[in-house]
Amino acid sequence: MAKNLSDEAIKYPNAKLIVIGIAENVNQLIELDQSVKSRIKQIKIPRMKEEQLREIIISGAEQLGIEFAPFVVDQIVQLSDGFPKYTHLLALECSRIAIRQKSKIVTMEHFNRGLNIAIDQAQEDHKLMYAIATKSRAKSKRLHKKIVDSIALWPSSEITTEELARALKQYTGEDITTAQFAGPLGELKTEKRGRILKSVSGKFATHAFSNPMVKAYIRMKILAEQQETNAS
Image (tube, rainbow, N blue to C red):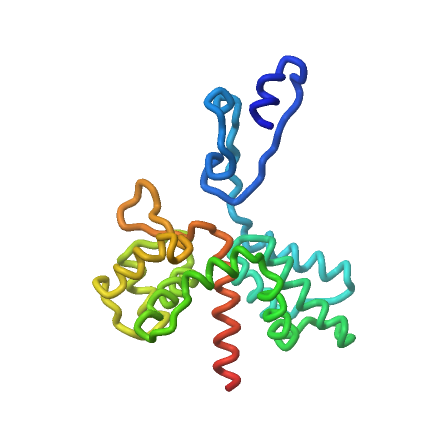
């Protein structure tokens, strides 16, 4: 379509084709003919700021005539990792439960129940990517999950190998050496593990999720697992 529009530019001088998606650059979204590349303008949109995500929740609640408890808002914002899709999803499921219970305030009880529903309603490719990356029968292989979870909980979108060692310590309480996690870390960038991770181009020993949005889904899964453990 882009090629056809480029060829017919004289007939339609004001026509514009907008392609929106989650990627590092336009080449990851669409394959372009060389003649089209010169006509493409890339506009990178950063993750939404916390105050913007809070506004989504607060304005939505006002329209519904309800209110979110402050801690619930904090939890939703923290899990969303700057992506409004998951802010909307979590807030929607929590508010539905509160409204069914005729509550004017969305509490942590509503949030905890809504969290599991939101996980079920998450994008299928996010669920599949995480499942492939963390699948394991042997206890010794669970390091893949520990690595993925630790990176998901790291505050920035990229993480160095040195930072990953610290993140693993914080998450697991274990002293896992670089030599121990180097192999599984590399496997998480292969087809066998769904390529959930990638090396960051131009940065030495730096890693990130290949699909940035999967981080929010993983954070939700981690919290749900922790709640289940605490309840048992």
